[in-house]
Amino acid sequence: MRDDLPGNDPKAVWLNQPTETTSPMTVTLIQQRFRDLHARTRRKLLGTLAGPAAAGLIYAFAVREFAALHQVLQLLFAFAFGWSLAGLYFLNRGMWSSFTPGDAGVGAGLQSCRREVERRRDLVGRVLLWSFGPVLLAIGTLILALAMVGARDQGIFPNGLPFLVLVVAWIVGYFIVRLREKRELQREMDELNDIEKANR
Image (tube, rainbow, N blue to C red; front, side, top):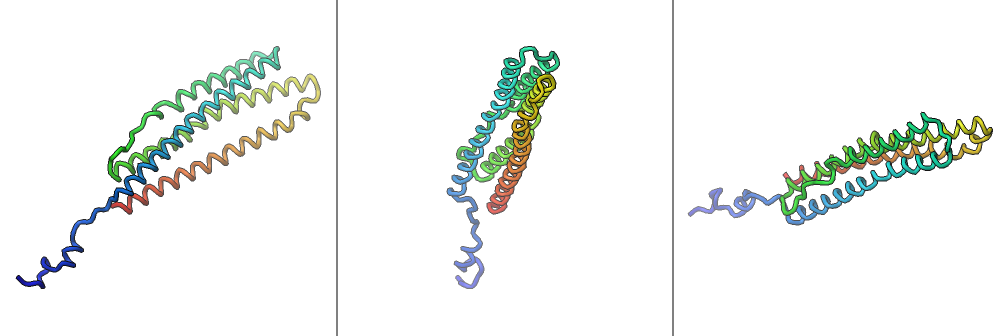
């Protein structure tokens, strides 16, 4: 038998053999990443309880402080509170159940991670309408109530200026945090795409 045939060259045989692209360590890391992403999504979902709590507290404060509250303001506060409660349903709908990759390979694990990032991106998009909106309406109604009282008592607005500054700072801060969160989600999606390319 001749050693110069391509099939007999040990180096050629070794170079042409199929390679295993998925190491157990990579699968373990992807499963860990999925668990981290899933935990962050759950924390974000628990944070959605803050919207109705804040709207309810503002509503209770307004009813207590302004006993003779104008009927339109009462309706606005009640609407903000009801909107935030409805938001709890729409924010949490279909968000608590998810596929766990378990012992699946890299492809299935990456798909699970990608779905988790997409779920969080959807949640961030929905929070503006179903959590931030009702709280903003409740705060705006409170400011309107303070303005109506201030018009009678002369002097609520100079004293309430720090409150208005805090509200404006909170709104600006909220949008900065949301923008940073969207960038972080995009970065996570890019990292998952890079891992997928590396494991092809």
